[in-house]
Image (tube, rainbow, N blue to C red; front, side, top):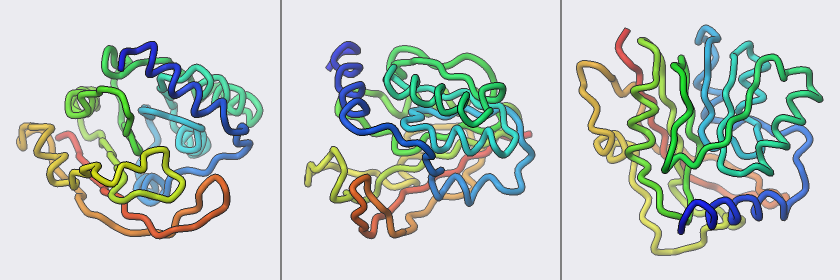
Length: 208
């Protein structure tokens, strides 16, 4: 699948559902950030914008990146509506071809899964190298399939956080794995259904 097909797919995903007026942050972000001094954050695959908007409310300067112009337009509108546009900027990227510029204290990649070809290890490696000294990369992947997920492939392989960390092939002298586990939670889908799901959580810190 090329960039045009990927853009068409993800624009279609967001256009097919009504805009979220007050998106919530992902649980793993909300449990990781408290206690960290606000700085510059990058949200890879920002989607509806729950993480980016929440970080901006916590005092972070946020760059929200996504391949979908529909998603980015909605996030930018929400930032203006909530008076957060001075702390939140949107940028459009096909992460398989380009990566946002700058250096960051926090980079989060929540559920960066896609049906089109994407060298995730390369993207996440670029993210690790884009951290300021002492900065953190938070990667949260689906460890199970929710009933409402667009991806219902029963044969989908879901690498665990230790495997994701190994694929990044980061020098342990420069980066430390602070968390690698697979907690469960009760999630609520866009149609209101609930289900128990598993997250694969990886938190990497760049040496100060």
